[in-house]
Image (cartoon, rainbow, N blue to C red; front, top):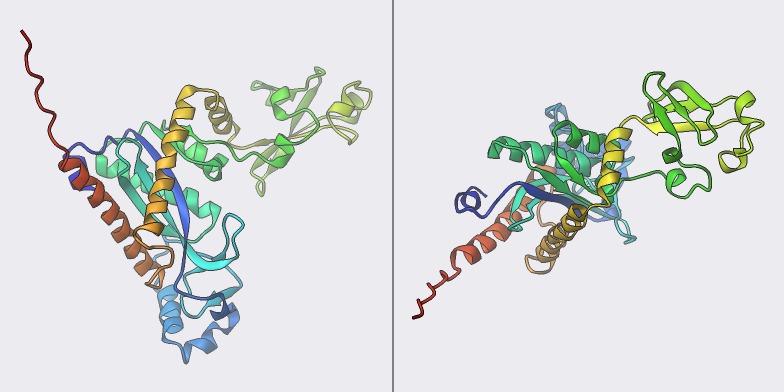
Length: 324
């Protein structure tokens, strides 16, 4: 990647991020209950190494999974599915890509979970920012990255998020008044409903990462718009803790820049198609996270070298002859 940057192939201002599922070199039949690992370690070298690695594990790095069953062939792999395909053992190969050149500027191996995709994106962006000496202007991604925590992380760093938000079904499909119909009053930390009644702050739900605002039976009971607002005796309004960042991402969806960024994001999917069809990385050859990480880095390096050679071998534009 340093060579790509040195020749001006990487701009680094507009990036895209995505992940793809890669099947592990392990079968689902190799899984055993986690409590049987100690017994399996007596006869299985891979499991012994896995348990020894857990004892020496860097506390900064989270385990790839916490499932009830673990593969004795590759204990770091995760049993999961994506896109409606049958569940398999595998990993996520996460890419951070320069939109201009389609050069991979960040790679990270994780377990195939949505929460790990966002954390991997944060780590890749942070490493690229430190390495390049400046942060990107924007990040494009699909809806799996549009959670409040990641959007807030980007907002704190003044990075524009071009991605759909992951809104709850109750917000997108509810027949009742959505949170957009309510007006926030910062001075009193309350909301005004469409009928003009006030919903006061009622506490926070750490599990759902929301703040609750509650009406009263006295105000909501006789309201003529109650049938459009709730089936209960009063309205309960749940607002995400990072709602400001989420709303910022929603507002960007109507811009031309959002449409352009989403088209550019397709380049990451093209890289994954090349990774599996041409490089042949549909199924891993190596086992364990540290070796899988190396295989992902080598594959991304091969893809970058291919584009670097193509860039350097382009013929120089011949000068246009002067006409009399």
